Image 1 (cartoon, rainbow, N blue to C red):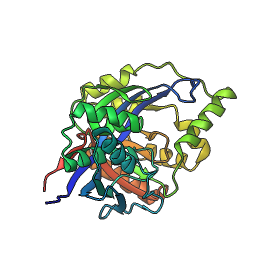
Image 2: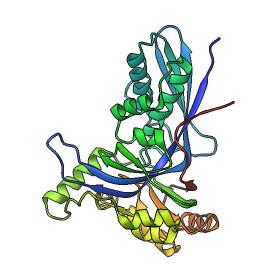
Image 3: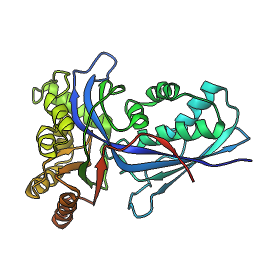
Image 4: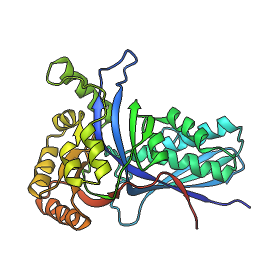
Length: 310
């Protein structure tokens, strides 16, 4: 009897994103510290016998996420994850995939990577391939730099392209305010702007080292210290491409956030609060300031990709 398997994968925020010089293959080496947040992408996988893959996308109830720009063909990472898994394990069956999006689209929070991780886990269970977690992590790295962390979750240091992960110690919960924009930012365009700034001397590649202040604040569970040590080398390029984001950062500072930063390649801005109640107050301030198209709150670290039991 065919059964539907559901898996969920978390959003992420980069507490540190340090970008090295562009290499000959066009990629940039990174040093980053990821934290998973309790915003979830859910992927449902229902096997089919004709070898075909289908994909549907919906927004999570109450999320106000616009899914119009999300592809529903082989260009979607979840689709590619299912194909890669089938090829790797000799699976002839197809699958009907359904994504329920709870992470902002094109917002620098790895929603697409979370879809890929959730699709790997859901399809592996639905097809009963017997894949180990390590084997899935190897496939995840072939799909994209952020996919291994989406599978891993929690807090981790990422090196290389961000896919070489080392778990990081963290105590307590951290409470975040997430300010999203209706218009996204293309990650390749943000990196291209970073390269332009480096070429013109407006920005210099950073030393690829993990920030001691970030790690110390995580170990202490200290949101004030962590907020003061947030850093992102792609923030200046993102602000150059979307100057409106500076208003979000300024509004977060006016709301007494512990720190605020552009998330990944943007355009989402995340602000760190002292407590859950403080996060709600910051969110209310940002909504009143009308500097974002949507404002929500989340906490981290959250767990990695798991099958959801009915």
